[in-house]
Length: 54
Image (tube, rainbow, N blue to C red; front, side):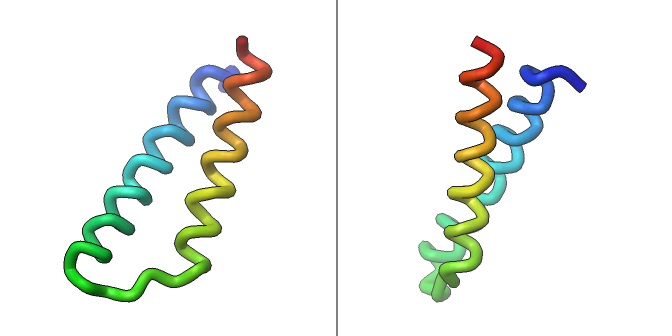
């Protein structure tokens, strides 16, 4: 899988995770640090891959 494909998969995953977190917040549920950290880690890897692909 090339870097752009990896970046697309990560972007899709990050988007789904962000939607899940936002939905939970909207429903008044508490969001754990673990969930937020996971999203940040995915976005960090995505940024790195996009930088390499550019």
